[in-house]
Length: 252
Length: 258
Image: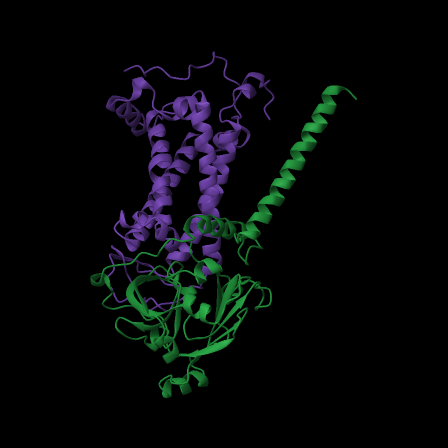
């Protein structure tokens, strides 16, 4: 073997090793810093992973745009009717007096909050836009309790990586990472435009995630679960949307 | 491959390997974006100006086409809903387009493709140069392009520069301006355009302008010889024998006046 080819062998061997370990390090760092979405497999995984990773690096602490009061939409579009199930109708007939938000999973004290418990906590309000994946949008004032306050009062454990939230509509559930869960604008919303949150807009309780599209702001929330893995939820894709073919991360 | 000895040709192909590769990747990404963009539009075929817009508000433009969602009162909901995979693919193809575009732009600045093939040569930056080319097209005698990319006339060069430096940046900007997460970090992305709905409307209009360019581009390629031009963009060489005249200078002289 000539010295040249040996040098080539060593160089390409080193390059290959560097490439493989570079990829391994990138993959490890991505997982460690939460840059890989749960729906990263399949033909569209590359695109949604690039979007999620890029936006997590740029937007971790950014605040959704707030608008002046004069820009609140006069006629916001209610994209929903009341859930048809009997449970919801019973709650509605009762004025939602028995509506409970259960908080469980990786928390020190699993607990549940009534609507008046939530209303007695620190109030937060924001004038932000709801943008639907269909293309339409409206601005409203949203009033509620920051999710971070509820998580802290339940004693969320540091190993939590996602918050899973469930609607009273059984097949409608979603999750967000801690960057969104601990974000000051992520709001357990019970009021809208100086009144109670109407049922058609997700009342009595909707989780507003204003830095993502409207479908992440799930309506009629009854339960939130802190977890370090999304594997045990549904098909493990992070929410019901990927099971219908929609991206888990909707920051676009 | 042609039976001529393409030694000189292969050293100096009509289109470089990088131009060919990025051309076809961009083509695939464009048609993926076009198809999925149409699918997304038909879920709400109305356009607004300003920050907000929904079916309770007056649209700027209402496309009277069937919708794929019941939220739009077109009255004839007939189309199947394809938004899920369309959105996934739209954003994936956008990544491919942007990364390919950056590769093309960086290489073209580095290797002189931009300066030599796309910027109109110094003597051609005149209205007369444009008028001459337009006149030749109108007489249905397109200006010859003897030496491939070196021979792009001022109209071609201008069209390519507008696509690369005006339409592509605009379509990317108006797309990013619709991202609630990115706009939270960079609010001017949306506010400089007049708001989220303005961005969406402009995104649609700019995509129409790009589609117009693509259709014109295809028509011109058909007019100039579809097979040889497509072959040149795939293999790097037209199927005609190598030209016998000496190599052309990279800046063609001003055409003679009749």
